[in-house]
Length: 441
Image (cartoon, rainbow, N blue to C red):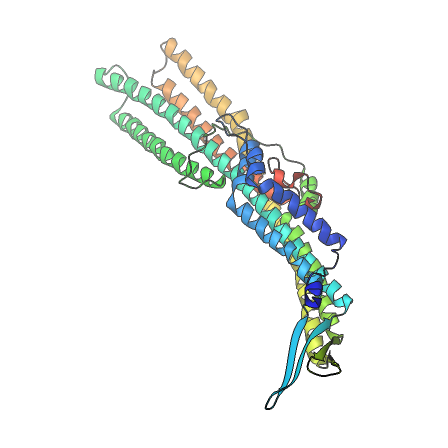
């Protein structure tokens, strides 16, 4: 009866543990199939990118795995603050017969300060696990955004190559007619060049058909769907330049909300808690108990006590020094991550600016000039002063400029997606598993 009563004893959780439990329970409730189905939008071909991101965050198994790792770390807090398990003891003296029969119990009286330090350490570890969960949610969202960009690029490029093929086929037909009749000034070399261009564009068009299939497979995987699952409704996205904050604002947001930095700050908190646990190792621990001789009359009780003496001070000092070194290493990693963050931010901004300059050149100079050349060729043909082959050739130049523009816009949007991952401290749009959680910021 005494053992059963003691086994049922628990200690009250602290505020930090209660907050962690409430947080993990709130998100876990949403991960249940009934609630997840309500969060998971019905995807249509006209669904927004945010809806596809929301679908992925609720569906992707990597997010679920990170959540359960976090939940396991929260559940590990309670054992650190719990009272040590009692030990049942038994002793007997046997000669020709049973002389004494002495069962008993021993209790480890660990100091409350040590249990508090261990609880703080476990709570800090759960903070690291939570940050890993946040990072996985953000990575999933960014993966969908990048797959969306690739899907839009593949479809836009394929359409442009189809336009180029139609234009080149027209050029080949006109040039062939002029070459056959001898009324034009088309040479055999020009005929071969046009046919080679047409064949090349047909090959590019077929290649981007294969690329579109591979991009859809990647997009489906980013949504958290396996090859055995039914295909989602494929969107028909178009590449549009997203608006980015100024550079100073980006750097401020990155320092304050970058998920990798937040995870490393949580690791510093964990290392500080480890130091407190190591320092408590120098406190003696007491184990007390009693045994009763059930054969003695009158009943004999034998008290017992064991004191654990931490006399190996060198070992304790080494453990404390190791914990402090881990704290210093975690703090140094924050500085190193800030350096990496600055370099990545500069690289992404360079890619965005380089693409913006090229897109501006194409939109403001190259395309207007080519369109003017098309108009000039058409006017010259109508006036009898130009060749009909010049019209489709000028149109082909315009299509080539648009192909280059799509490529640059793809590079820009991939860099913008990476920037979104660098500066996201709370969930991006479409990640509801973090949006209303107080600890997510």
